[in-house]
Length: 194
Image 1: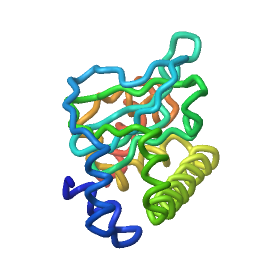
Image 2: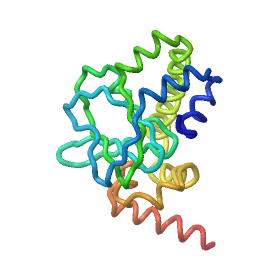
Image 3: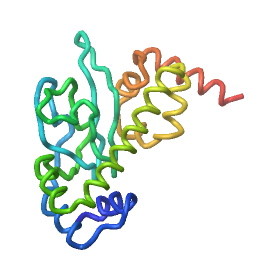
Image 4: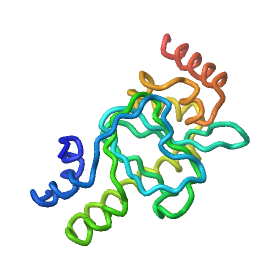
């Protein structure tokens, strides 16, 4: 099993050799080029992704405008709360912002794993609890904070994104136009000079 994935699962609870081998057998490593769309709006998919290297962006199209709602980076699952039910059409897109190396699994194979290894269902539940908590924190921060504070928080918590993705996607993520982001950056830069 890939060491990054093993470390991730081990952060929830230790896994047996059989569990590790079973997970490994259900995941396939794939390389995707920058700009590859993994999921389109309206599409159903049973695939799940774990980022080994790269950035995957989740966004919606609203009146022809892309609205970025999340970035998934190294050692993160690409999890959409909208797609917990694999038979429900997606409301968003998933796109590789840069060349990505992903582990690709299948939710149907995951169900088979749960039947054979009940411990993995516990791991999955803990993973989803973490995801729900992170999503709730993001929603609250977006609702409460100004765009400037959102940008400053992003600088503090996810500095790696600024070297890997274009500024217009960061602007979309914090809910402003690229021009507004430029003004925010100038104000922050001026403040730092004092």
